[in-house]
Amino acid sequence: EDKVVQSPLSLVVHEGDTVTLNCSYEVTNFRSLLWYKQEKKAPTFLFMLTSSGIEKKSGRLSSILDKKELSSILNITATQTGDSAIYLCAVGYGGATNKLIFGTGTLLAVQP
Amino acid sequence: GAVVSQHPSRVICKSGTSVKIECRSLDFQATTMFWYRQFPKQSLMLMATSNEGSKATYEQGVEKDKFLINHASLTLSTLTVTSAHPEDSSFYICSATEFGGRSSYEQYFGPGTRLTVT
Image 1 (tube, helix red, strand yellow):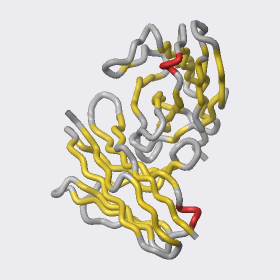
Image 2 (cartoon, rainbow over the protein chains, first blue to last red):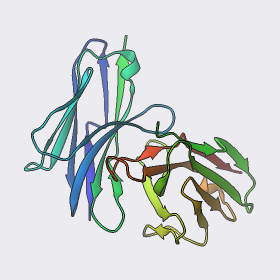
Image 3 (cartoon, chains in turn blue, yellow):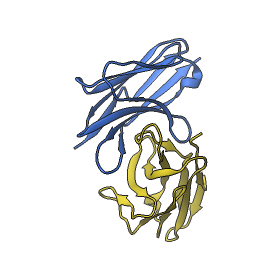
Image 4 (spheres, chains in turn orange, purple):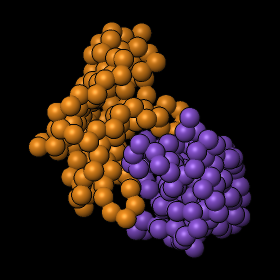
């Protein structure tokens, strides 16, 4: 059965800390791995990764995919209270339609 | 760009009634729309995939007669929860992929609909 697992499930840090969120997957016909940030409502897109070893960056956030280890990490440096959210990892897999399977998410709380 | 809206944002209904949720892509044409359900402190679970003009494809365990999906145009999909029961109370989120977009895996999410069945 295809699955996406994220760790840790939750994390509490202080402003200014650096955090690393993990995502591992076992998905048949892997096509891409995506990271989303979910605050109170729907998820907002952060990154999509398709190639192993190429880091994607956006401000204080960065992510990299390791296809050999079937995993990805999301790094957030110099965390701010506005980074508090659930971070979701999703894997796109092949087939007739381009579906995503989501992980359980990591709840990040950044304290002042 | 790539904005998806949902209506209503919140609905409370009595057990046994039906509720319709609309999902619209506002500034793009959506090749495919997806419907998810999210229970508290859990991740998004895909319910069904819909393509304009064809029948929706439901995930295993999702009753198609209970969750009716209509995808009438490239910008509108509706989910109707028929004969709703308290266990159907959940957060329903739709997403869409853009026709001709940079990636068919990049889904744009609506703001979600909180359904409470009393």
